[in-house]
Length: 274
Image 1 (cartoon, helix red, strand yellow):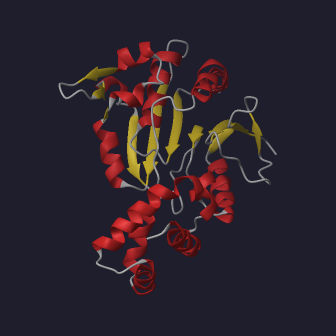
Image 2 (image 1 turned 180 degrees about the vertical axis):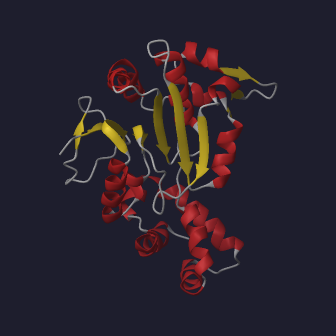
């Protein structure tokens, strides 16, 4: 399968999956390899035969959809974002929640993959915020459409390289190394986190949330109308002045007037009262 053949297939299939081709430009090599392996596993002669298969086999669309999910994850990814949350934005948000008499800090990690992002928030809260807000209890929901990734997340063990951006002292306090050389998150850092299989295109948790992380999923791969739909539904689930974090290379739809940047040029947005 040539690159051109793969591109044409993804461009043809993307609207049916409510995705956009542009989001796959930088990662198409990975996606094309997966599709190529699938074509070979089915014993088909090429991309044309696979497209014909899709036109008559409804179940194959779910397989193709899974092949198009690209996951690149590590702890404390985009360090400046988590530094801004820890040092400025979350203390302010929690102080306002405290003034309202709240005692739960509610977070949603959408498209959590194998768990590095929600566990990062859990470590950040316990080691970076809890001392200043001892009355608060973290309630963190992490969702993803891939059950296999969620099983890895629930296990909570990772190659050491995925921790390289996590502050060293935090890594030493929250992880233990196994005999196999994996770094496993200590039980106390897992208690507040619940993993749930959900496709962001079809369903969302009820909320409300103080913080939503929706990074490198909706605003990279989803078609523009779906992006606007997802953003409106996220806004409904945020508390007043709640925070939304997106990916470093993502942007919100141009008409997203109900959010304002919360920390300079960083991809962190605050729900406004408009």
